[in-house]
Image: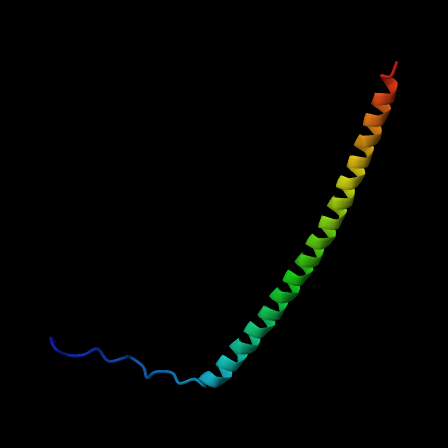
Length: 77
């Protein structure tokens, strides 16, 4: 029939949205907290790595300077 509107086969389901919204809010807050903790840990790990790399670079420079001194001393007449 033309002009008839489609009627739903069943009645709409009513839910208590507030309960689900509150649960989703709690889940989002927990996920946010977990993400912030992971970011803080990553920052700490990056800082520790930067310190190690800096110390390693300094030690390499010291060793290279020692090698250069030894090479200079061995080429002296």
